[in-house]
Length: 168
Image (cartoon, one colour):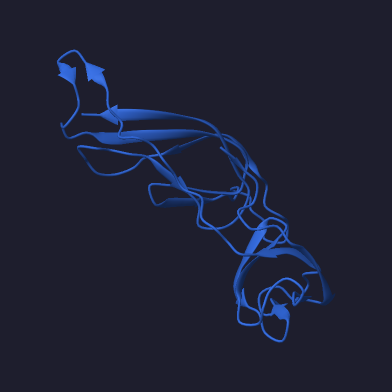
């Protein structure tokens, strides 16, 4: 799955620090989401033809502003054939989900969010996109275990592959 920024792309230039003129694109009262570079600033309501993000980032001079949508990928139930027969209808759990990510800033697996930050994270610097393998360890047993991948913030996400480990 390749999805670069889950926001309907509208690059808006500001006329004043943190205040974006959006009247040509969005109606007053519309709830829009704002991404500034690698940071999700949040949802804002358009008023007087403007989206005012100055309470969060007064230095913002350009941003992606649009309607957020949440991508969701859901696998079919994970099943396997083992020496004693198939695992169909037997309780089992997903012990490991390993995602191969490329230039990713935000991902969620079965409701566990991961917004990428390095150990030496400096809030004054932009986030560094994650490339490589990331492990998730879902909890619980099910007769139909599935992997659901989504994200809570409309930031860059690209998944090149996935490996799933099942315990029974």
